[in-house]
Length: 237
Image (cartoon, rainbow, N blue to C red; front, top):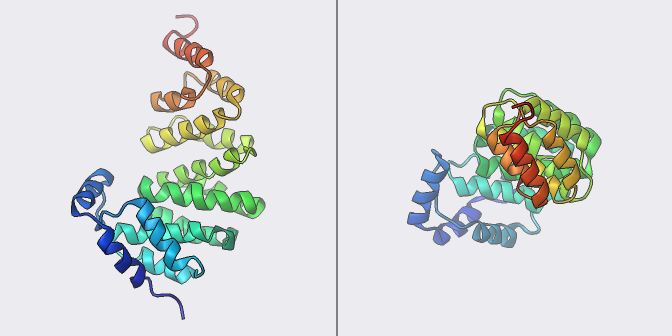
């Protein structure tokens, strides 16, 4: 018998706040219902109730609830049991990304789950994630970019993929794509500022403002200042 997700939802209800729920709904511009539960509290509930229990069917059951915290609990359940997942789970995660259609759900699905699967099962996982990078749904394209983060943080950046994904999306107008490219570059700059500095310098004319600001945010001050000056006063001007 698969666990009933109702016990998770009922455990979350008394932890909510009507005021916080209203604020979250407005901030996330979501049509879902909200309880107003803080993320640390939600994680504590899922860990306490499902530390030793996991089923993909329960993830689906939680996700099907028209409640933000239920969907976030589904994401947290996947994160909690990440070592039980492999590349065969990526089609399920793809569906959640498409239906999530918002950074609060898409970002952890990508960076905490799909990207971690790619670190552990690179060959089959990236075959799937590469298709996300070319998808018509910009949330899936954002997810592909954010899947690069775990490898970067582990000191094993996939620079070829970063170049391929980011170059293909650099001219996009969608804010969430521009921000994601910058986010990936910002994370890489913590470990390899020289690479990010050179990458950014070679693409100054093509970069949006938000991508540029994120890319230089963690660079050494002399490099950030030099690139900012070059962007403000391009050669030949």
